[in-house]
Amino acid sequence: MRRTDVLLLLRGSDRRSIGRADQVAAIVAKTLRLFPKLIAGLWSADPLVRMRAADASEKVTRKNPGLLTPYKKELLVLMTEATEQELRWHLAVMVPRLPLNAKERQLAISSLNTYLEDRSSIVKTFALQGLADLAQNESSIRPRVVETLREATRNGTPAMKARSRKLLLRLERG
Image (cartoon, rainbow, N blue to C red; front, top):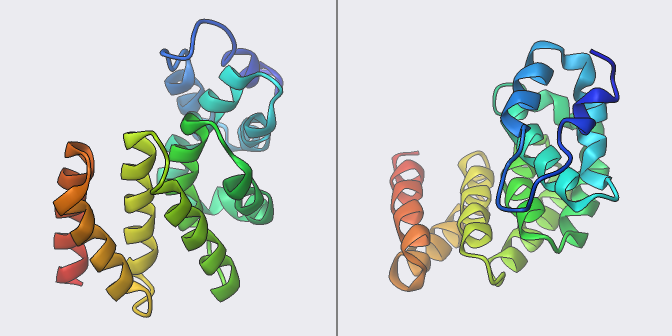
């Protein structure tokens, strides 16, 4: 498969469909040298390619989070600038997979807190996930994140409440 083909597979259809994102994720997971092309899709001029590239990138990096490291600066900037909900919810779980220094972690937390104000329940739910993922390995932010999760169990959408309960159990177990 040629390098350009992975992004071509992500074109077309409509926003309600993930198109061939799962197929692209499987291809890239087997041929990791295609990951740079896939991650470049996050900045595509085509909004469908952007959202599907984010979906496929997130899926590939569940098992290979280190693939994101060379793109850390760009992803942190994109996280602050992204307005599309589909991009935001994938960034909310990808960025916490990065090795972040204190300043970068604070930028990610700030972005995730902004995402908690998004209109999309999915963005809010994944922002909670991202905050919990950051707090898992950073005890200094854990009390604030636990309070945010508790607040979401009381006042969030049904998805936020359910996710927050699971995340609280994980964080409280340590």
